[in-house]
Each structure stands twice: as structure tokens, then as C-alpha cells.
Image (cartoon, one colour):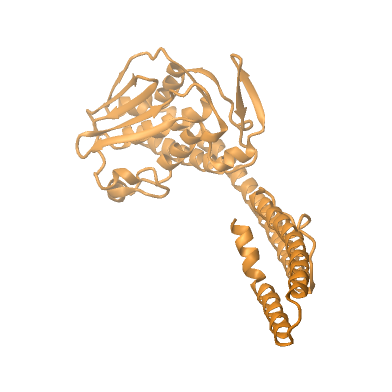
Length: 357
């Protein structure tokens, strides 16, 4: 009805002229006392002819509008499917659209080349940084001194930032894939805890942990990155003598709780925003505002949930929900949906695989 209303408004002038002509004929015939049947007969034939022409033109107009709307809904819009122009003005508009489209394609291709070069450079940089970091760790581990322990903690923080850069680049990369398999959650958590074992001992922070008898459908490497980020924050903001607890809630929700300084109530709704550091980050000047943002994006792509509960000066609890057994592409963000094309079958179920890490 909307298309018909628009088409009718476009032809109101023509309809008005037709009615005016009919009125003139009726007036002239009445002034000369001519038979009314002749006027009525000619008017009916003219009305039928005009109605036929009106409907044919409306059908073409409707098909043109439908084609344009279908092109708007396509992921890739091209000018090849534009309806043929009916007059010189439409031809000029289509030529202008084609010029703008070509310019946009040139700019897009130039941006893709620049983005690809930047991705290659930073990816190579992050991999090259890992070599000197590993060498420095070996030198520091040679002597068991308090100074070396502090330097090892700083080195681990540097390594973590390098991994965050690599993760940030891979999230938006076309080559990033996710491999969903049934994983032992206990094994993944132990890997994350083992990486921070020295900090637990050096800072005298107690770890409360019981084996987790749980299988989850996830990507092990990406989930491990999330757990390491959460544990790193728990250790960073928990003073010596504090406690970090890792336990499982139903259904399949992993909880990491600390007795640290907590998060201010006004900061809690924004801790997963990109670049947000809050009061704690402004105080110690060590927060990047990227870690929890990456955790939220990764959990969304893994079809997991991540939430935070905290009270100032009492501690923080991070909950990671992994209770969704089936994985649909609808749960991914738009970049993952665009890249999903392969399918992995696990226990008879089909799950989209978005590539290889």
C-alpha cells in the first residue's frame, strides 16, 4: 500500500489534468446541447484506457522498487542489478551512482591493503617480542632472588600485554577461526593457575580450588586466554594474605572470586567497555582497559556469558557461563558470522567453525 500511495502521489498532476479535460468536454457538450450519451461513452473509454496505462506503469514502478529494496538487503551491493532507466534524468542519476560506487570500491580496496599491511606488521612484531621475553625469563630464573621475582612479575605482565595485542588483532582478522570441541574444564583452569603459580607464592595469596568434573563445549585456547585475564586481575587487586577462590556453580558456571579491593558501584556497569579503567585503574596506573573488553568479546564469540559482581573493599566475583551445549552462529558477533563457513561435527552435532588459531 505504501508503494501504491507513493506512485499515486507522483501521478496526481496527470490525474488532475485528465479530470479537468473531462470537465471541459462536459461543459462544451452541455452548452451546445449535444447528446450526453456521446460524452459518457467517450469518457468511459478514455477512463478504461487511462486505467490500463496507469496499472501497467504501476507494475513497472513496483518491480523497480522491489529490486532496489532487495539490493539494499544484500551484503554486497553492486550497480549491475539496477533497473533500466526510463528517461534522461534517471540515466544521469544511475551514472552518478556508478561513479560513486567505483570510488567507494577503490577506497575500500586501498583501506584493505593498508589494513593487511598493518596486521602483518603488528603480528610479526608480537611474535618477535616473544623471543627476547623468553630469553629474559631464562636469565631471571637462573637466580632465585627477591629482585628476580619482581622482575619476573613485570616480565609476565609485559608478555601478557603482547598476547593481548595479538588477541586484539586476531579477533578482527579474516583468518581467525574457532575450533569447538568438548574440553575438560579442570585441565584448562589448571593451565591458567599454573602460569600464575609464582605470583601466588611470592605474594602469599591463598588459592582455594577443588577439581572441576565438568566437560564444556568451547575453544580451549581462547577460553584459556579469558581465564588468564581474569586471574591476572584477581592477583593484581588482591593484597598479600588475600584469597582467590575458583569453583563451579550450576549450570556450568565457572566462578573466580577474590578478596581484593573490589570495584566501585559506579564503575561496575562499565568494566567490560573498551578502554575503561575506572577508579582502580586511575589509582595504580597499570590498567589498560582492554583485558575485560577482550574477555567479553571472546565469550560472546564462544557463546559464553561473563558477568561481574563486586563490592568495594570486599572483593569481586567473575562468572563465566558455559552452559549452552549447542552453538548457533546467531550468538557470534557480526565479524564471526561473516567468517563462519566450515562446519565441525562433534558427537553427531554440527557446529560452525570460524577457522584456525
